[in-house]
Amino acid sequence: MTALDSPMRELALADALEWEAARLADIAGGRAGAAALLWSCERALVAPASLSRHPNFKRAYSRANEAGWPVHLRATGGDLVPQGPEIVNLSLLFRAPLGTASGLEDAYRQLTSPIREALSQAGISSCHGSVAGAFCDGRFNITVMGRKFAGTAQRWRPMAGEMAVQTHAMMLIRTPDENTITTLNRFYFDCGIKRVIHASAHVGLQDLVQLDEKKATQHRFLCMIADRAHFWSAPRLS
Image 1 (tube, rainbow, N blue to C red):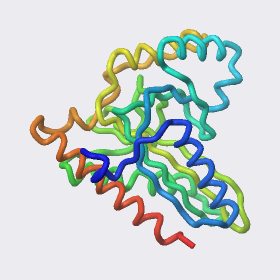
Image 2: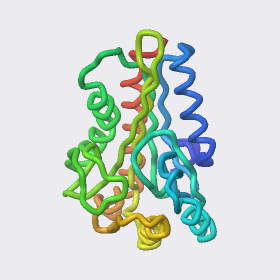
Image 3: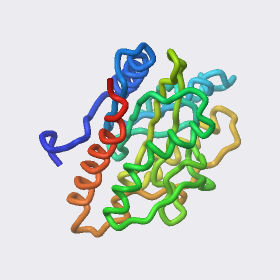
């Protein structure tokens, strides 16, 4: 896939996180109605800001950086996740009405709908659910054959009469290798957190399609997500 025909942008992780924060501020300030971005970045670890308050975080942070895994903090919740060229992210931001009883679930379903549709078009059945041993596990993971394919997170900010919503999904293009899993487990060990991540709990797109169709399937998959994500956000644009 070339830079000319890819719907995905390659960004520095710091720039991607800054883009998300800026678009959320634009929506909360009434300057925009919605935004969507499909992106990938360099190898790194991303942790929720809450984890930085852990007594042993600085030690884990330093050791990860020394091992070639720089650590970034994000505003959304969840847990520690890897980033890198073999992961694609979907950031979808929009307005939501106040007082929606199922607001969190609706936001997750709006985020995951384009991804699950793209998987279905590739002949891959998916569902929502938690996966024991997966990193940043949650009930709105997108799972394939009982393994985690994508993880999700969101953040809500009040605005006049509405809420500004930031949602994010990270999709595994390739199943995490042992180095990635070891890095996650080492970070938890250095923090003194009793948590173990297993490679077998995850699956990447490249392991779900035929060898001779990998590049073409990946391209169609990402194009469909980009098209559907903009379709979902368009009705809320100012």
